[in-house]
Length: 135
Image (cartoon, rainbow, N blue to C red; front, top):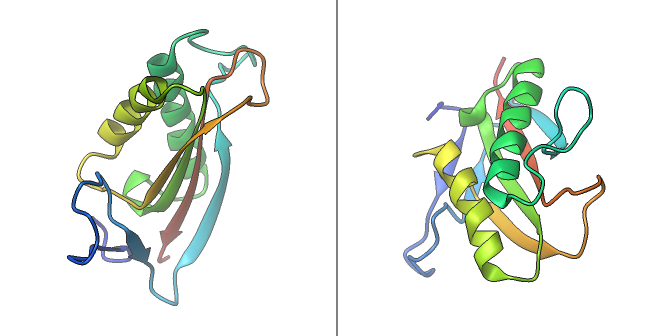
């Protein structure tokens, strides 16, 4: 984990979450606000139609590209929001498992939400992220 990000846990909060409850960045960090990473192929088509895991994987790949373009990496991410177009908890967990694995030991504060619909045809998953880097 880079020195610029500090993940915070509290013994006063439930120990069931698979992520830190808070994170900080130093005052000299450059914050990077990513638009929601969508499961879109280069040609604009939606990847993994009907497959929550495949769409989460493609969204993660696209998030990596956006981070790289901004001079950051996944270990610079300070928080995420994972949106899943479903009212079924099992679908949310399927997408979450892919996202969680992509972050490995960098267990940033995250919010997992079921939503009614997302913006692109056949889109089931979107991942928002904020990163912090010290240049």
